Image 1: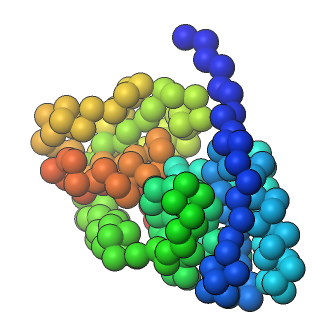
Image 2: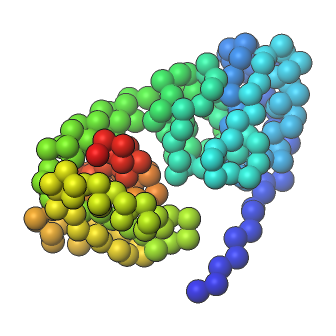
Image 3: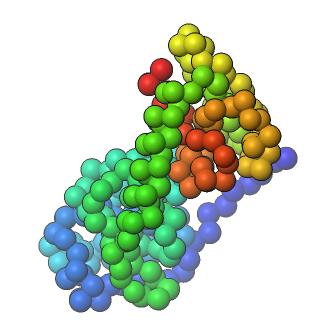
Length: 222
């Protein structure tokens, strides 16, 4: 199926109140989603006028400075962050690798809040336990997606070779849409390795009855 992806931008002027600007540290990284990417220039100028050093950061797979994707988590070079957008999915992506304050401003409600790390910290701890389970496992199931941008067949096959050299049995599971229920039909798999969207290995691991880790988190471990 041919697909065409179009950016959908929100037409609005975004501005922080003086009280909200006072809540922010003197140096931060600024993030938003593609919807608001053309609406943050006013906020950027507000922050600079207030003497705040702003790092307009971006992810590996984004096109615009300041844009973040919720499906990648990276260690970003900033002492704190300001996220402009609604919901918690994208702040969670920042929090996975960055144990720093994340200030979230919702342009719709015009409310500022400090991101609550409790749920994501618990998920990260579970992920670290799953990585230890991977080292102990003798039978591995590698999940490969056929979706564009999520298909890493060559890297998975190299990973398979490395695991088998360590004495592990490796099974390849290829699909377009991952069905978590069906994964429980393979009881011989002791640990799943996800090579598709990395948030699957963080957010969805409790949907299966065996540990799940992300490929990039364990690739160098073998």
